[in-house]
Image 1 (spheres, rainbow, N blue to C red):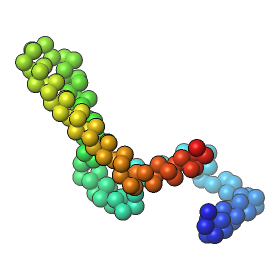
Image 2: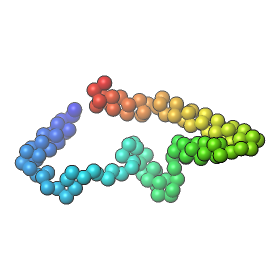
Image 3: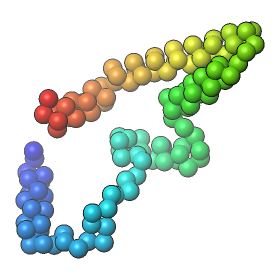
Image 4: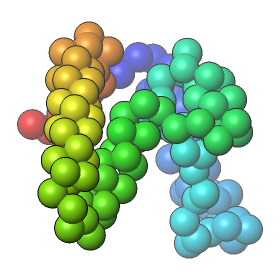
Length: 122
């Protein structure tokens, strides 16, 4: 922990002991966190712009497409159409798996994973 973090933690503890956090307006209620909390700071503005425009990240769009294709496959009785749907589903599944594999080997993901494991004590 760096010195600034230690100082901040100490001041927070002192304020808690003095009761400065008692009776806050949202005390005991869950915080409504922005849905870009897990996104690296450098990418947050881009994600917000895309979200406001109604655009999903590619991996989420693929997952959504896979759910739709599965629903269509379950309701399909025409064998030709079924094969076409199955082929589309296989292609999207492969693309999704490749995308996730690439993300797992991304240095930023590795650093993030290491930080999480450190916090969890494993």
